[in-house]
Length: 167
Image (cartoon, rainbow, N blue to C red; front, side, top):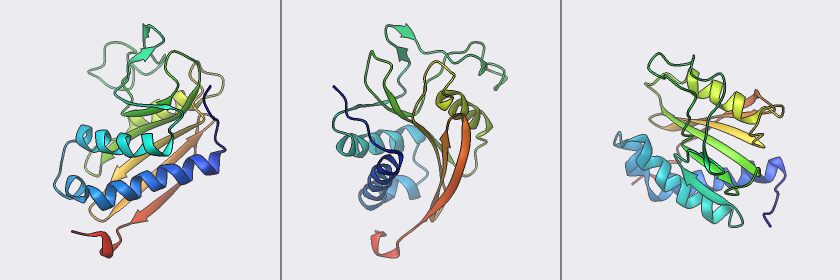
């Protein structure tokens, strides 16, 4: 039922959604808005790029079960169980079809736990097997994208602010 995209197409569509976010909602990025506000708007733009998939924020389900990620509870001192809530996922609900998992972070926050989550979510030997993972780190004038595939960070890139898009 869902449509699979090659890796380069996924990356292209995610970057288009980020471009729309930066153009339409630069205020959220520049005003220290909460990550959830940014994630919500980005998810709206991702849904337009992936119309055959479900795009959800903070989705905590694996079928009817609570989404758990073995090995993540050691990542944070205050985490008492393996329950996880990815910031954004592109998937087909109630199936094993998982396309993209995204974590968002502001420049001033630690994100080692998010890196570990993305490694585990994209591990082909794991239970989720997302095609790609992405950590988006928001800065003052740029976004840093760290891509994950097969349980490893594959590369990173920067999207620099276009002065013509500033409000």
